[in-house]
Image 1 (cartoon, rainbow, N blue to C red):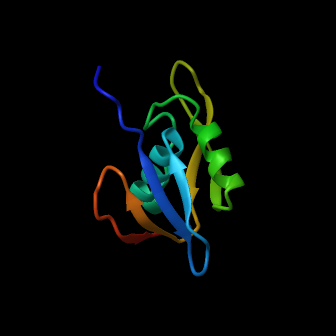
Image 2 (cartoon, rainbow, N blue to C red; image 1 turned 90 degrees about the vertical axis):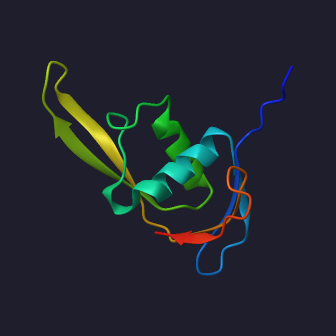
Length: 105
């Protein structure tokens, strides 16, 4: 059986944060927040299980992630959360990109 590699992202919060590692879905969530930038993301636009749970775990690591509550219409009208990464983050390594270096945010 082929071994499945887990996604790992090593990052630090700028300007002087210590390197930290996010693994699996937490790493995926961090990468998604970086990718979408200031427009943020919602579970309506990016369906995935437990987005709020991954955001909570990243917040506990010290990342500032804003929650914006938005209303929506349709057959299941209500509201949803949009999450926006407000911390400036430097990605030191990303297991899906062998020599990743970058700053987001």
